Length: 244
Ligand code: GAR
Image (cartoon, rainbow, N blue to C red; front, side, top):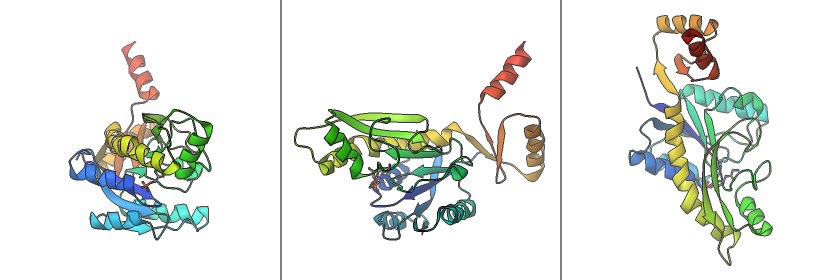
């Protein structure tokens, strides 16, 4: 049966981007996805209250845990809630390669600058806007990208530019970037990502069949009783070969 993708949103703070996602879902703007879980790396994050108000299950996995335990606890929750795709919405912990490689093109992140400017390890929140103002750029913005093992290094999905104004402070600039870019881009990307993978639940007999197909080198990903079909070069090559 074709189903909408179950989305987990990872947060660490105020959660205005989470709110933009929840509002978009309420308004029917994410028809291919369903926000099924919120995970916060901070127990005091206001984002947890936003999730509670929207009746979305929310859990804290403290970033004070060592990386292995932190990611193991997150993985347990993802399994428990049968999550298909992940959205990092102001999530300020860095996920290891061990974690990100299990979710290829299925984790996206919002960053408050035009990548590749003002990004990477140590560049988050207000620091990004401080750096943009210190450099004297006239335009900044926000970027949504897939997450891989390089901080802010994954494939770019969407970007939106925002003008810097005379007299801007990091706080005024942060607010404008959120209003004019982040809260618009993130819900759009949260709809694009699930629609990029076709997620279908299959009974065990079909899973066996697809395990066989996978063995034969077609590029299907079997995931928790589901099959995710990706249009890749390998499939295209096979099609080209058979057309010859
Ligand atoms: C947002 O500006 C987000 O882009 C940024 O943190 C803020 C979180 O605000 N994320 C990063 O800097 C990631 N590198 P929010 O909790 O109100 O959504």
